[in-house]
Image (cartoon, rainbow, N blue to C red):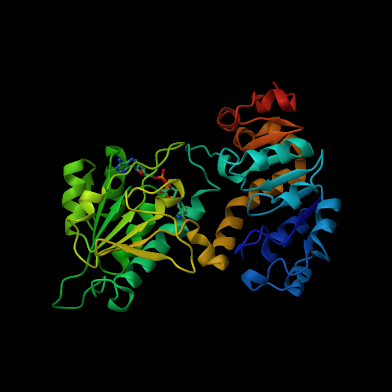
Length: 372
Ligand SMILES: NC(=O)c1ccc[n+]([C@@H]2O[C@H](COP(=O)([O-])OP(=O)(O)OC[C@H]3O[C@@H](n4cnc5c(N)ncnc54)[C@H](O)[C@@H]3O)[C@@H](O)[C@H]2O)c1
């Protein structure tokens, strides 16, 4: 198969669909790989690195879209990209179609077969192609919080780990899923006093085992949240209710009970945020202050570290990507996790949640692909 990787064109997107190491794997499987010139610039991989891995460098995105049987990207296709997609071609990338009727229309009109990273599943009921970005955001949340706590950044002026003879900072993580686990790991690593609040008792048990007593675990109630948030120097918002907006667990009123100069990092801002006072910010102006509390609410945190994020993403996407390149539609037909990833095929929506959100009739992936 001919696999193509264009340069990402969404504003401030520095990640790339294929690393040179991933290209080498596709080439080793007997595939031809086309990479748009400069596609890897944001991760420090020049055209030479891709050529050394066996890719052919092409001058324009059009060259990639016209010639490739499968296009591998990071972000959802932009209007000029979906205009170049065609029936019989595979698109493998993040799509996030439910809130995006225009893109959905574009993909339907193109006839392309589109697999959305964010809906590919695994045997444990997880979303393995979404998890790496949550890992990055969770770990980054502590770096952002530690910076925010410095006096010059408006914070209280407290070091997360303290020093011998001085107590460490108190970090409260609300939501102990993928983001919360990785935030807690970083905070513990820096020597902070860490509490994880979650409403899933099985998850709290698991976290207690993972950290072997190094974090406190607390069941999420209004009382518990108030107590933890009031005493915290840094609060990480990491809750998720799948398919729903994040619940506003920390109200404006609760905020006034927090320490002045405390910091909140609302990682869940991409789902609306779990603090009533949050609004989305950007990497160029990441923080704002309400009631003396510093808010960091960047909606695309992994974008700050494109090298780490791209490699983490490629690690997660490679095996399914190779299966798609090796076996085409048969790979989707034979693997229920890839079938769950299928969102659009030959002008029909194959993901029920997307169809429901946008008022289309869904067709089951099995029916669309003609498998039993
Ligand atoms: N800002 C960014 O750049 C960025 C990057 C990656 C992920 N995210 C977002 O981070 C959020 C968390 O993602 P995740 O992958 O960790 O999700 P996850 O499903 O792994 O974890 C969510 C956790 O929240 C818990 N939870 C739900 N309701 C709760 C409540 N009332 N009180 C306490 N805990 C509660 C769940 O039990 C679960 O353990 C999501 O909104 C995700 O979209 C943002």
